[in-house]
Image (cartoon, rainbow, N blue to C red; front, side, top):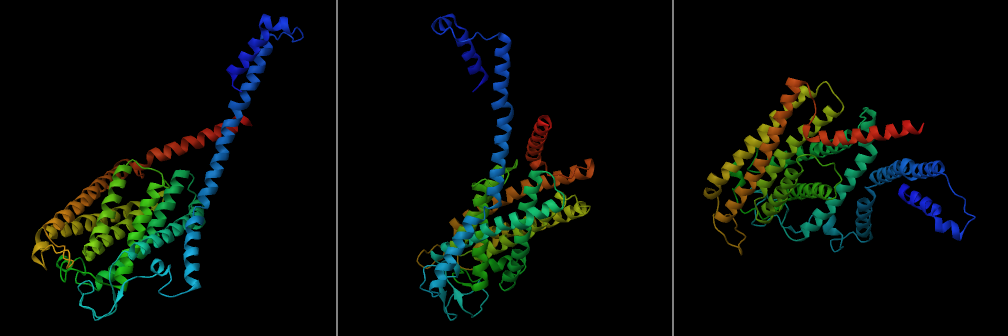
Length: 409
């Protein structure tokens, strides 16, 4: 009951007509009315609201600790279905294993390398493979964050809830890219595009068939980016000031992944994967060092910026330039839907537009990196200013809760 309702009820009791009908009702003094209103008002507004907020917070924390349960249950279900009949005909087979295996004597090349091993074609069942491993990575992310990374953040003494959440997110990215980066280099090593050789992107086009390592790497990477987009859509990460740019980055990246795979520019996709994975590893580990207040964060941040400039700008601009120069001159240049030939003026324009959009976003983040580096060197502020609002909000909530507990005592 609100204070205004209580005062209204007291006024009704004091109304003369009411006392005529029921004279046994005692007349309340103004002082007593005020005391009752004060006591009744304090109950719902003074104590219940913070208590409700605390209960809701505990409920959210409990759900956060168990977010891995649903995707893990789906993964276990798929594996159980396959275990009942472990054959190629099992409905779960294309979810777990690569599809469209073809003979090693096929005329199609493996990424243009000329290898005569067993290769895999492409088809709609590849989407099922990506969907399953999106669930696998989602479960792995939530399980690692809840059971390993969150306790690790507490062990390092990270007090702010926002900083703990950021540490968990960046540590997961660091773990994933630490594995994906070397695997990408291995795939590139076995292709004509070794060490970012742009003529190798178009040699032997179209690359309709892939070796098992190349296809698995490409599709699992697609699953990772799909999982990251799902995390963003579900709002599982705290929003930063560059949220719009992050949404645009996911849209451009997923478009590049899908189109380069469908229209057989696979090695171009592999090279873009590698440049982003390695630079993301250095960026994520740099942020983790910042969250734990490591004395190495200054020199390591400088290394991170250098790696970022080399991979995301020098190498990616080199790939972008090759679309203007080598795209037309190396390999067939014709649009033939029946033959699977898509290297033409239209695909060149789409490829250039997407890579240019990706480069523009990376330039914006380079500006953010340089600005943060300037603030660190000149003012000694070791903090990503895109995350300041989250930290201030979290600190204010913590201060409000502490003030409430102090008043109760």
